[in-house]
Length: 353
Image (cartoon, rainbow, N blue to C red; front, side, top):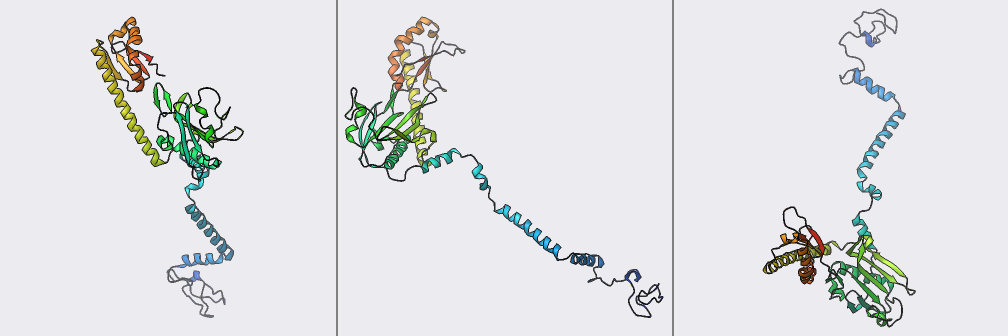
């Protein structure tokens, strides 16, 4: 083996040259010897990796630092973005629609008004000051809507039924007309001839409920508008906006309605029981009950209805005596079953007006 510094031949197991004293190459170390660049005894594998990283240069270190900052920024953004950020693309719910409608309700207080007159199926008239603004009229129409929907008719002066359907008087439909002048407030109640203000409608605003929607009269289907000086109508709202009462008031109204329906159900059952008792006392072997699926249908079951002549006579002579009571109790049709388990019977209208 030769020393690279001076070319002197040395022993193979020497660590330094005997002539020049320089250390021999690492490859000259005997097996198990400690390498010159070893750090803290961890071997030259780690030290070589560290030297390699330092040899990469400052550009690589700058790139790595920027990359780490970008990754941290991305994760931070994901944590801060809320799911609600997608809300604008979501379709509005009915509740959102109702909130939007309520936000269009005027904030000005409704004007003072005076109940003028109300008549069954002819409407109700109220009078306001001639100086009442259109915005105040809008607020008044919203007040009427809330009172009618919550069945608080007495709060606006209506203490008698406004409609009559199937022979029963109630509040399922009506019209409230608002006048700025008392002189014209009675024009809807003249049976013949022109009213005091002549031809045409002289109301300043109106609110109507119980409209016909899809072939059915809906008590909650309503509309309201303001009448201009030339007779034109400007809509303020309609049932198409899906407006609902405030939650607390709606819950109270629903509770009252359920109680009323339960009371009506009990009254109809009592009516059926009483009718059966009186028919049997008159010699008719007839069983009577209220149909479960159709609360406005009264069922009468007897073998006598198998005979056509007897059935016709019963419908023409016996049933009419009960017509008024049937209509008042809410029955709109009867079903005559001709005895037997498999008879479905025939349905007949009570004829309530």
